[in-house]
Length: 337
Image (cartoon, rainbow, N blue to C red; front, side):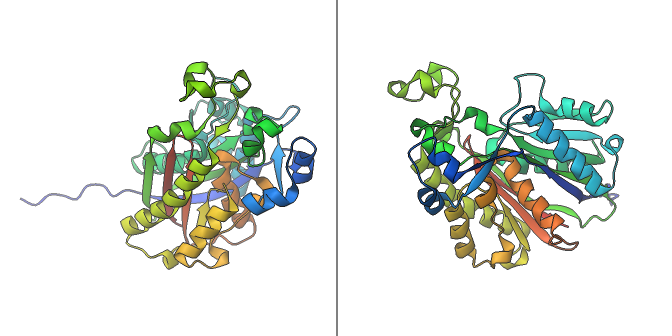
């Protein structure tokens, strides 16, 4: 007996994007006055020239709210059109409540589903994959996905904390995803991974017991970003191209078939290595780390929003979001626009 075909999954369209940046800029020259470093040393090793730092009344919540408001404006939608708000962050303003419900209240969305997701720098990519699945399974029609972090609250601006201080900045950026009757639109393929054995290489310890090596305990390190730079760099250089290849293979595509690689901005050298590995044109892999540093979960959507506002994101293109970070985590999300 023949079976009737089941319902087909709807498409998912990225209908808007928006960002929010702190007012205060922290340049390499500013860091020279705080620690033993130099503009030349930082640029050569990271590609970073300046980054933003939250201050005053700014917070992860306020930046996330502004970014989502700007994304809604870009999409032509109202806050009440949202069914769900997802915030990817590792720096909530307090342990509870999470940021997402406050964002929905700030915007006037009504009693919508809202929650945070913490996968560090991979958070936005993981949240995009989750939101796409929720729309396709019918749990929501319109979802705001926000990446927002104020990680500088966990930075020690002295020579003692130099390794992390030169890298990180604060920001928020968001996209609006909407159900589409065009089944060809949306996520084509995805990959998400974690390695808890590597967690010790990038962490913000809060208790002495959080230190993998107890001999390294120092009270000054509590609530500060601790990073084994060499181990993290080695991890990123290996996993970054691997997850791109994995996602391309799952989609049955070649590197040249993707129009934009929306990459987490952790280090310019890692990005350039990936560009060379796949023979990508400069226009296909945008680098903005020089102006913002590593903005954690805001990193990928900040690149996407800049490209979109510049008119470089067009219907019919394919874009791949790729990130890696603490956890250790890494993943990708390939979309048909």
